[in-house]
Structure formats: structure tokens, C-alpha cells
Length: 88
Image (cartoon, rainbow, N blue to C red; front, side):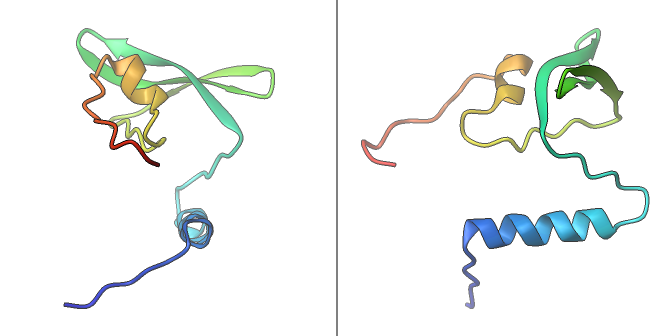
């Protein structure tokens, strides 16, 4: 089998470029997640801050791709099942 290795920063830059080039996609950076929009047991969006502005964004699907210390996971009440291996 073949594999591909890419430096993390290069991968992020390519992902930003590809996402921004898609029709109907608004790429927003510098945003901080502060809460989830809930409808009963379902998550229907996010509340974010952009600088000093607070904004609610609704969505059919909310994907938390914010890393190993995920704010999205914490706000959703999903337990952190990671185990420390003693190194990073």
C-alpha cells in the first residue's frame, strides 16, 4: 500500500484553499465557538464570536473538527475517552 505524508501546516493551507474555492462555501477564520444551538436533544447550530461580535449560525449538521481538546465535544457533553501515553 501507498501513503502520503504532509506537514500539518501545508495540509491546513491546502484545505483552506479548496474549501474557499467551493461555490456556496463561506470560509470564516478567527472565530471562537462559545455555545451550541440546541433544539431538544439535537444540535442545530453554533454561537460564535468574531472579534467583539456575537453571531448565531444554524446548520443541518455541526462538525467539531477543533482538535484533541475540542470545545465542540465539551459543549456537546461528549466524554473525552483519550488516554495519556506519557508523551505528546
